[in-house]
Image (cartoon, rainbow, N blue to C red; front, side, top):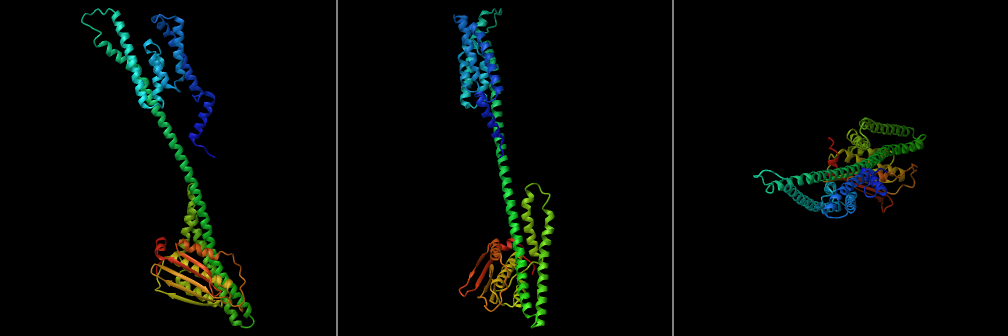
Amino acid sequence: MTTTGAERDAAGVEGGRRGWGWWGRRRSAVLDVSLAVVSALECGLEGVGFAEKASLPVPLGVLFGLVVGSVLVVRRRWPITVVLVSIAVTPAEMGYLMGLVGLYSLAASEVPRRFTAALAGMSTAAVYIVTVVRMRADVAQADVGQADFDPSGWYVPVMSLLLTLGLNAPPLLLGLYIGARRRLMESLRERADSLEQELSLLADRAEQRAQWARQEERTRIAREMHDVVAHRVSLMVVHAAALQAVALKDPQKAVKNAALVGDMGRQALTELREMLGVLREEAPAVPAAPVAAPLAAVGRAAAAAAEAAAQDGGPCLDALPDLVEQSRQAGAVVEFVVMGEARVYGAEVEQTAYRVVQEALTNVHKHAAGAEVVVRLAHREAEVAMQVENGPSDAGAAAADLPSGGNGLVGMRERVTRLDGAFVSGPTDAGGFRVSAVLPVAAAAEVVPQRSA
């Protein structure tokens, strides 16, 4: 089972959090603790001056500074707290490092922008006020020595504003940039993970389509081989049985039956060579495709081979009289009825109609020896229909005793439904069997181009 990058990162972060609190990684914890120590030392030193100005014991001022500076250790977990503490101690003139790092952490965090803007404004205002007061006190104590220069007018406000912006703007802008960059990287990582999952799904679907194509091709080849071999071999067996029966009584009829057996065997071999030859010609086009492409190309190449075989020398409706005549020569009583005006259909339509009639006649030879058969072919406006109906078998006729795999009706149904046609088969009230199929001409003409007349 494969894992995405986000899952691996999440697993790493969760594993780190179990050992390093809210930091997730050891170096993050070391960095924050180091900054907190430096900030505590800074605030502790500045606490000495704060204690003198506030008339407090120096150890108390140092302890206060150490506690205040240590708040920086929670900057990743609670950045708002760090900023609020830095704003609170700004009048005491301590916590400059904490204020800078706190603003950076706040801007880089997932805190809503309205809170970030409000806290940044409060921090800027506090620093500006303290800076103005400090500069006015320094200017008042200094001896400028120039009567025409009044620093209390514009100098102190402008310089205080520049110092405030110089302290607060860089960490705030840097934090905004880092936060935006982090969010962008997370979105790109999520997008990459989603694309990876989509590619995995596409690969699975391609494999499923390839398996379906291979299965479909096996079924198609088995159906073609069954239709080609079963009919010819069935007639050959029937003629061989007749030849055995009349060999001594009527030598001339025996010679005729032997010739028919030879002709049918040659026809069967010819059709097999044509089919296998087309498949062999299509085979070199399949290899050398990348990964999943050859798997899907197998079905397309096989389908192209079937269509090429159908268009080049394949059976058609014009060959139905010969097919019926072969059954008559085998001793069956077959009536062939054509209704409607004969037309030229698509090669696959004509091949399917031919195979349906062929397989139906084969079943008659197998299971209804001596039965009378009626083959009907109807040319309609938007469809072509065929029906093969046989009566009950003749009790006096010798059975051919041919094996049956039970795939004849299945193959006929598959052929017809592939062209969106209708197929019905079943016993009749008279004790016979009926096979009916209807093929839509328009739908099939879109699949296979028209064959020349």
